[in-house]
Image 1 (cartoon, helix red, strand yellow):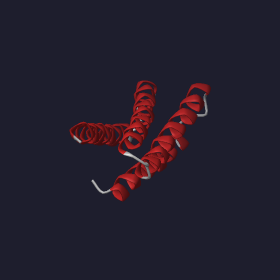
Image 2 (image 1 turned 45 degrees about the vertical axis):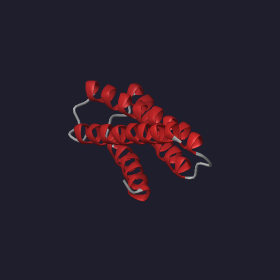
Image 3 (image 1 turned 90 degrees about the horizontal axis):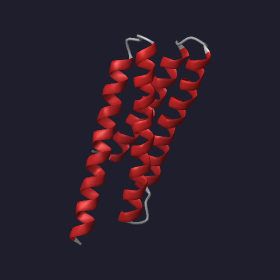
Image 4 (image 1 turned 120 degrees about the vertical axis):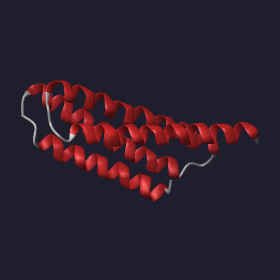
Length: 118
């Protein structure tokens, strides 16, 4: 997948999450989740951009693993939100987050395999 398209998917996910969380109640538990999910989704996107500028294959793989941690955390917060809210966008956001996880895992595996062969 083109790195610019993937980068845009991370940006779109973060913006969608910001929009979603603006619609949720201002209760304490939602405030905690809002901050965490926006932080983790934005961090995933920022770290993906950093990975695209990696200095070596090892650096690229390391940075993608950081992306994977952050986007997986985003999925965790979406799952928590789903258990306490029934917003119609949650399933679509979870689907997109799972797709991003699969893409990053595949990129890590491909890069690792290529690196071990050389």
